[in-house]
Image 1 (cartoon, rainbow, N blue to C red):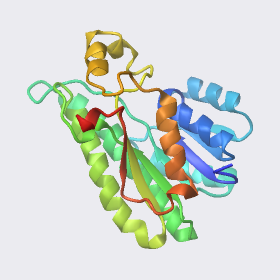
Image 2 (cartoon, helix red, strand yellow):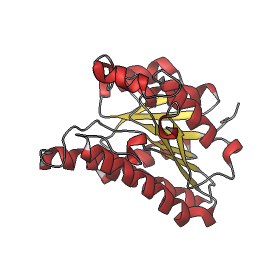
Image 3 (cartoon, rainbow, N blue to C red):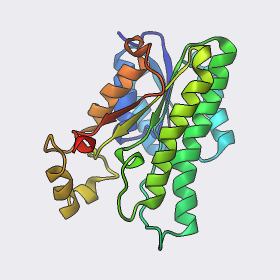
Image 4 (cartoon, rainbow, N blue to C red):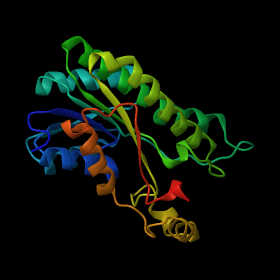
Amino acid sequence: MKLKEKVAIVTGASSGIGLAIANTYIKEGAKVVLSDVNEEAGKKAAQELGENAVFFTCDVSDSKQVDTLVNFAIEKFGSLDIMVNNAGIGGLGGVTDASDEAWDKTIGINLSGVFYGCRAASKYMKEKGIKGSIINMASILGTVGMESAIAYCAAKGGVVQLTHAGALDVAKAGIRINAIAPGFIETAMTSDLLASPFGDMVRSNTPLGYVGKPQDIASAALYLASDEASYVTGEVLHVDGGWRAR
């Protein structure tokens, strides 16, 4: 088992990519705190994953809630080795029509929430001498633009640079910070979009010719959390079917 006796937090874990990561980690021996704003789905998911999973409600756009989440994991399982800042939302609206509310919400969850998770986890790891792994969820839209998604692209671009800078800040402590940049993945959040003509465009522009599954991202998150990636930090791993290679 690659994560035996490790303790992990996965935000946005009630469904989709986050749930796939939590499930993969538990299969590899970790104890996992699943976190989400969807309490009902999160509790059900944790129950189904068994005794090494527990759920804790957290809105990652609130730094105090993120601090409480980290403290809960430490109290529950005795440590924290892996932090996966996965929680995120979609965000539509372009440079001329995105509202203040939509901008603030998207940035608050997708960028500020990642920072709060990095800060809380790395502070604890540094204080305890834990050579932990922090994994941030970026996107291909953090490096390429897309029409009518300005807040989402800005937030994910911020995650990329946050990962680079944060990794330098804690490298001497042996803490690794990396990011995963998924392409288009089949989840509840993307199902309607991928069923539309937009989905046909995505598939035709993805060199491998199909849309990814949550497990594709979970496998990357397992690698970055494990000792196999012990010399990898400040990296953004694109899991996108070749999208950026075009």
